[in-house]
Length: 74
Image (tube, rainbow, N blue to C red; front, top):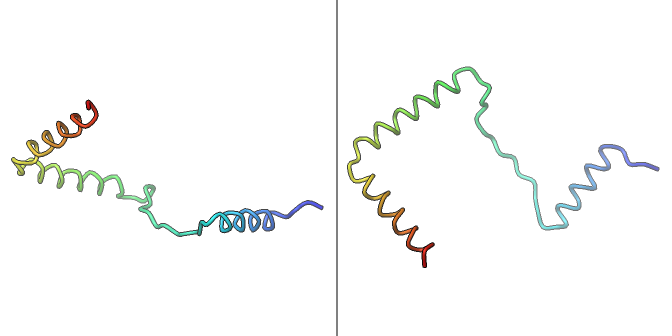
């Protein structure tokens, strides 16, 4: 006798739980919503403006990159 869709789903969930996993629900922004792209652009402009005002940021990022590069060369 074959399993129903619900029985197969339950079997899969039971196997995942037996493997030490648990289900979680994650809410994320709906990228299809009107205005989503405009809000992304707005936030990007805010971040870019903040980065442009932070004169030490470029030096910090360059130092961090050089530090990482040194780790990989060793």
